[in-house]
Structures are given as C-alpha cells and as structure tokens.
Length: 453
Image (cartoon, rainbow, N blue to C red):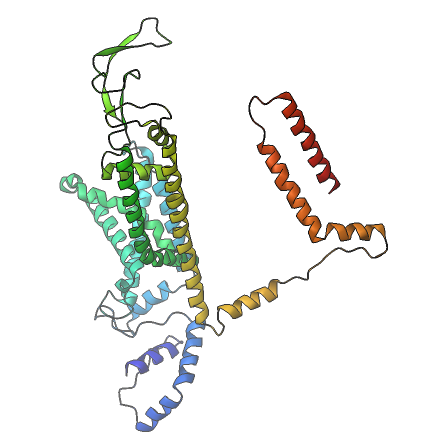
C-alpha cells in the first residue's frame, strides 16, 4: 500500500489530491506488477528527473498529510526554481555583513545598522527552516529534515540566532548578562557553510575532505610516532646544552654572576645589567619541549636560529660557542627530509587518491569503467604527431638535419653540459690569475660549442 501511495503521489501532476486504493490488490495484478517492475522503476526514474522533487508519503509531524493544503503549499515554495538561488543570495549578503562588522566599537552606528540586517537574515533562514519542516517532517520518518547533516547544522545556527535575537528584542537584563546567550551569536559564522550543500562541486570537495579524515588518522599516528622518535634523539643530543649567559663573555653558570656593562651607540655612558643564566626559548631539555621545538622547526618559521643554537651547543651547563659542532646540522637535514617533504606529500597524495576514488565510484554508476574512460579521453584529445624533415635527401641541409637529430649528437651535447657545469663549480674565492684565465678560456670554448649547436 505504501509503494502504491508513493506512485500515486508522483503521478499526480494536475493539483488534484492523489487517489490511493484501499482494497488489497488481486493476485493477477500482483503477478503482473512483478513482471513489469523493472519498466515501472525506469519510468519512475525518468519522471523524477524531469519533474519536481516528489512529496514524502508520510504525515509531517503526524499532523499534515500529503494532501494537506498547507503542506502542499510549503512543498511548492521549497521546490520553486529560484528558491535555492534566493537563499544563496541571502547567505552571501549575510557573510558580507559579518565581515563588515566593527570588532572594536560594539555599539557603533555601522554595527547598529548591520544588526537590523541580521534580524532580516535570521527571519529568512527561520522561514526557510519552518517551510522545510512542514514539507519534510522533523526526524522520525525517512527523508525528514533532521535526517541530513547539513540540515542539522542549519537548524542549530538558526535556533541559536533566534534565541539570541529573542533576548535582545526582549531587553531583559537576565539575557544581557548571560555570556552564553551572547556567545550564541558567534555561531553566525557558520552561515557561509550553508552554501556547500547547494553547490555540487563544493559538496564534492567537502565529502573528499571528510572521507580523507578516515585515513588521515592512521597517518597522523605514524607522524606522532616519528615525531616522538626524533624528539628522543634530540633530547639525547642537546639536553642541557641550550643555556647561555646574557654576558656573552661568560660560558658557565658559576661565571655568570654579578653585573656587566652594555655599550649603546646612542649613549655615551654604558648601561649596567645583571648577568642571567637562562635557557633558549626553544630547547631540548625534555621530550615535550623537544616535540614543540621540532614542530616549530617543521613549520619553517625561525628554524635557522634553532639550527645555529644547535651547532653552537657545547656541553651540559656550558655556554655556546659559534659553529662548535657543525655536524649537528645533519640531524635537521634528515628531519626535514622525513617530515616537511615526506609526510606533507603523503597528506597531499591521500587527498588526490580520495578524489580519484570518488571519480571511480561515479564511473561505476555508468556503463564504463576507469580504463575505458581513459581510452575515450585519450582518443578525443589525441593529435597527429608532426616532425620537420628536409625534402631533398642529397642536399647539405638534409645532412645537417641527420646529424642534429642523431642520438650520438644528443649524448655529445649532454656531456658538454655536464662538463660546463663542473667548470662553473671550479670557481672559488682568491683564485690565482693563471687559474682564472684558464677557466675563462675553457668557458669561451664551451660557449662556442653551444653556439655551433
């Protein structure tokens, strides 16, 4: 009976109430329906594509039946051609109003005017939510309003904005003193997310990000393990070695006592300051601080200073000496290869793979697979290959062409490029005049060879 009611609702297009049979179907009709089930489903799919979205065959909130005029009017408004476009325009205007607010002066003239616009936006979104609830129901039956994630987010934003608006319009001191009620207005920043479900491409990107999170968790665990391993190694290498004295002439805590003079170019007399023995802002005295320091190094902001401090580290409870251990730079080279290069590329590759999987899933709905689609795309985009060749084979031009396109000639030019690169590497500071002339003559020889090429 439910299936018959759905078919009757979809086939009704003249505004008349649907006709639903109450008597049970006869056996002959039952067998006939079984034989023609596939044809009816195809016909039903074509009607759904051509016509508007059908009304759900359930009573909305157990009150409004599919034939109720109020529900039919709400269904008609929600499925208007320009309804979603109007909501998109309102969302865009609301986002512009949020960006135009004055964050410093709360009760400025601009904020007062934008506040009235916010009342209008909240009213529009509230009407939209109520119309969809009247049309689809709340949550109990399949296809209802709160059965979709985006509708839940819309409902939370609209309800919180309506509560905040109600307390503001009432003017009660209790509502103004509640910081929780006032903070509900912050949820207005979620309004631009309403555009995602209305733009298919944005929704595909969001779905890709959400699907990627399942595999990102596994990669994140491996990332944390490697971060912990490098932090433990850094603690073994640098613990207690990132201390320094404010007086650079002192190298131990015992010597870093008393006061010292600081000479300033803008002052004739020196200033007197206390000697302090303190650690660097980023250090490796424990694993937690080491992980934080390595994360700062990974971001690429200010890490050269950490590298300089590491190469200047001497011994425990000793001050730094510039370039005391240059070999410590190898640790950061390996760390950069593993983390900023390797793991970042893994995250990017994961998102690309997720996009490809979604594309393959869409292809599975059709009649071709991935390889067949690749062949079709290659055939469509294929172009004939062209190659220049002189007409007369006995001419001098043809002989030159044979030399230029030959494989030995390509290898010869490649060797010249390699030797020329090595020649450029042989230049150094304070080189002799004879050595400099030899390099110049060789460079002229390479330049002439490339000119002949």
